[in-house]
Image (cartoon, rainbow, N blue to C red; front, side):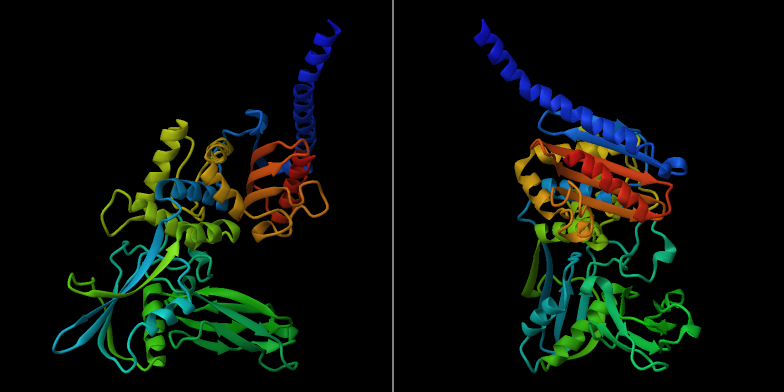
Length: 457
């Protein structure tokens, strides 16, 4: 009899420990929800024990809120499931020659990571000394709407909101770096990649407080690619500036790269690739690389590229961004049974029309966890607390250090976080936090890190 009681008690120990862990997390979260931070703001929260298969703690998890960049988790999971790890984003260079002339055609499919090095390799594939009558750009992959529905107009001209096109180089943006020189003199600056497509006017001065804050902007109101550096440069500073008309930027840079290889281009134009043209070079970009940049660095262009390629599954060209949005909507309905409480307007979370609930995002995390192949990719490419990506400077000094993989999200008035946390009891937890109506994102992140600390303890 004593032996049976002993065995029973031993079997009950793990259950008791699990219940204690649940109580500990709930109690800590209850205290955190009393924070003065929420006198003016709100939070939607859900924490789920993936090993025990039960909800640990929730608070207004059904409330529809802007998810910000946490929406990229949904886009990445659906893209991996629908397209597969071996899927590639291709940019091709074609040649078509006649007795009269030799033409090139470059066809893009929104490769968000195509860079200057890829362009050099493409140009190197054309024999030196070749004279090209016309270099054509084939932009038939997507429609001509270069921004998503609900994107904020004054996020222009920054690089995180590029002009979308099938042909993107260096994410359709340039990086401007400045550093002060002698007091009262113009600061030094560099712009990469180098191109004649844009011009720079340096009106700033070094260590001259009378000039006000340093700004690096493009004359975007006039659709100009003139970059102006103004104000007081007192320390090194950099800014990413988008280029007006990404496809034109791509063409201009390709002409310049071809010229470096001794290839003359007489004209540029836009046209579809003829059926009788021959492929002479293909740049292939792996889906996992795009997912990594979308999650680790919260890159908006990579998320939108994933969305466009999701839209290509059952639709003809040119593709609309809404085709991909519909794939995400159907995924939420078919997999989780939600018919309302959400709206999908893009793949990145930039749109003011995006609305999700913590409950839906939690279901996405649970869904990914149940698919080992998907989870392995997602977990590996989510930022790690205190170590990498947008979580590099988070949780240092608390129990969550190195034990969280999560996607951050920040737009005006919204600070969100969703991912996975490893508890002290060895359990894996999925969690979602969407804080809204709060202006100081730094204070919100401190609060979120306390929640992570509670989970990991």
